Length: 460
Ligand SMILES: Nc1ncnc2c1ncn2[C@@H]1O[C@H](COP(=O)(O)OP(=O)(O)OP(=O)(O)O)[C@@H](O)[C@H]1O
Ligand SMILES: [Mg+2]
Image (cartoon, rainbow, N blue to C red; front, side):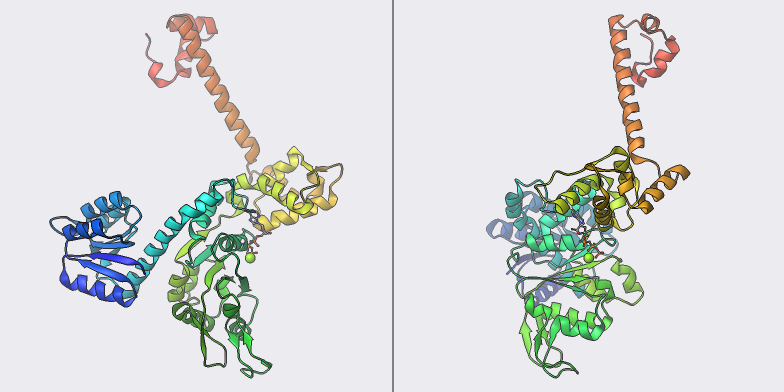
């Protein structure tokens, strides 16, 4: 049971917090000032501290500083009066997980506490996982050369060991299911079931019985009692794909299951306990759907304890060619020699904007493999649409050729460096006499000054 230390010098607030959090099943210890808190911290270990900022003689910030230094594994949430958010932000810089403004809403408090504890769990358990992953360059089967994808992999490593609900965002074909499977694979549930349901593919009634099961005779066609995905995935992970398409009535039912950790079959009256980790995916921001009344806000809060954003492929060009290698390997197996990609083809793949993301790249490579000759993937093996789009884009200036641009830039920078080195060396060899150096170099003194960095401009 998580242990929470609550610190506030206002007795009413202290009691209120204590009552709420005890009611949520936490093991709480109240402290009426910073000194008492420090004493308690010395004698006992806590998972979380919730502290008011405005206290005397030791104020909340000082307490926070001492706690982050001596007890870095403990999460801290700060309480702040309305209108002093500046201090709260300061507190987060000092290592607080989050802050809550007074007066606070009950569910806001409960949720923030829940997140802080889950985050801390993730950090602690992450240490074990890190050790296991130490010798591995990347998570199995996920190409991640770009900073954007590295961040996604870091998140996977951090949250996989927990049971926290994760919401995965990404355009179509970016790898949402791949991430969901990795979260399962690197979790303690890896030997249990991973079940997936596509919420966009089923009509409401079917989805309900699919998820929660039904009893015999619950509706026409229900000839026998059937377990739902929640029961089947008990102990494992349930992946709710395209959650944005889930009808509101199912959303309410799902919320209840998440809160009570129990399911009731359609048409049935018995409840059964379920322990399932939920991972949801969406290619639309759920916040927008909440505004349109299409998604329940309370469900959103439950699902988005942790969210992972997968950037579209066009925003991480570093991944394109490594992905091509990975896809070729997957298609051809380990025993076959991989075909080469000529320069022009690499250029086209690099410059296309991949609206269908990694899936589209996979299809493109499969297409190319069907046409490949002499072990080389050239432009003629690519789908015409892709070649045309890139060539037309470069002609009209819509696409700037990334590879050429990069090359040009780095060459310019390189020459600039070399020139500077050469000028400095010549000046040195003339004992610092710039006039002589200019003469030696065959340029005017003015040109020499222009080419030198600012600080050496003054004549000696
Ligand atoms: N970073 C990556 N490394 C290796 N393979 C990847 C990567 N990202 C995606 N893929 C591959 O691309 C294909 C599409 O990925 P996935 O099905 O997970 O995407 P998705 O976001 O769920 O797509 P959709 O929105 O269409 O359901 C899969 O074959 C997956 O293995
Ligand atoms: Mg998918």
